[in-house]
Amino acid sequence: MMPKQKTHKGTKKRFRLTAKGKAKHRQSGTSHLAARMDQKRKRNLRGTTTTTDTNSKIIAQALCGNSY
Image 1: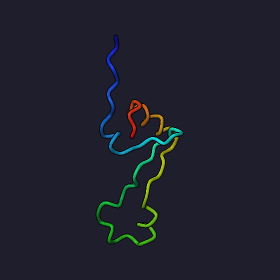
Image 2: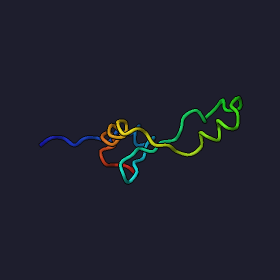
Image 3: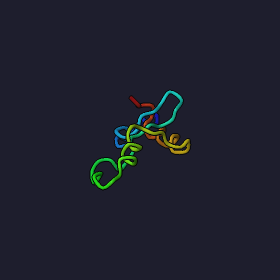
Image 4: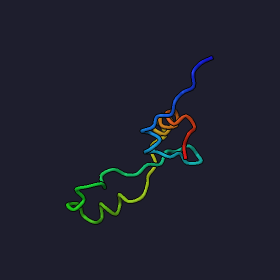
């Protein structure tokens, strides 16, 4: 019998799959050094975005069905 595929823990912490299989993630560039950004850029970095279809397939494979 083949061994089971393990979930990639770094991927599990950063991504979440939607019902249609897209991968949601938090936008980068908001942790620190944000004082020099203008408000419009900081406002547009709020919330989550989805990845492309190609990346979503790779992320779903790394998650092995273990998304929140």
